Length: 562
Figure (cartoon, one colour):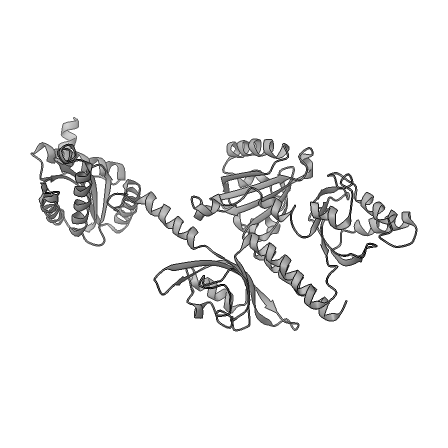
């Protein structure tokens, strides 16, 4: 093979390694529920700094508790032992004890032999648990990366027993199906090759003995084999921690010229890239794009011509999140993982991408740029933001809902105690609202609620919090107040706003408000008591004829309780 062809093949290998290292999906191999192998992403998901820290751990420590692990093991075992791919979205535990939502894919190497091990693929879906993207992940992901790759794959254990082979392995090396069944012995493959002349003339037994002895050294290896049928197979093997190795077989028959070798390399590369990203890119030392393949980065055309020679920044992308860490990694020429970049188009539409990159080095070891992959996550993020908004806001008025209000009240109470400040909670119930619903219908009632929500917000400061608890009940949190008189001024404004009629189809919808006020710390320090006291005060306002406000009186409440 010519030097140019060799260089092209080496570049192909480098590109493939970069893609696998940049993959956003964690991959692990377990046996007897112990992690025997992990890629770097899997370790990162569980909070480890390196894949080696995860290897040797029991799978049980990655679950929230023993009960959840037992349920998971039972469910997964039933599926895997049946020879099926297992998939579940579940909460797993990181090494620091925190929980992370993961989408887990698994397939037993050999269902009838649990000791043969299981391949697991783990994706962190914490930030997108309810997003549409996770639903689009196919149960066939494992098959796409193993059974249907362009390369043949074989996995043997420390005793050179075959753990698994894929369909392409049998096709490339022309092995019969019976020989490729799980549990086959490595030496049987060597014997089959020797008997049909794959190794050339010579003593068959000696050919088998020498090659088996070489394999038992479990050393990394890569070479090309010319087969009697004229095909050429590139064979690349890497040892597995704990014993055994994985070998990848690639048909390089057509790589007789460097140009063709490069084209075929890029075709295989694209097929792998599409499994984990939208496009592949390379940059020079000035971080300007020199190569891009896949989907168009800005989404405005079919080619990358307009992006070549420009940086992310010149294309309008800015870091969304921890820009300091990202920029520091670039300055230090270090790898970066899943950086989120945002760009706003001329029409105001935001576009978000997630990129990962590895530094490139020239022959002298000097930094020469970056190579990486990227994915458009705009739809994922928009769905995520919409889900978050719906989870914390009232769908009718757009105000904070009960969940968000209690969270913000808790924060405010803790801050007030820490800084020796006061706050007030106003519980508001609209008077005569049911009559509007009963006489004019729910459309009128909804209009009144939305209009009151708008007026209520206008009565408050930007730092105050207003929420709808449900029905015609609202609540206001006023932080950093001086005294009750200041709160009373706000209450008067709210009463005035509520009493202003709301026009609806020629009718004037009139309501008023009853307001209960709990001063903190005079009323209570815990959120539950604060809300209960404000509610009691509101009912006191109702009893005094409605359309007024009452402060919670702790002494009066105690007297009544007594």
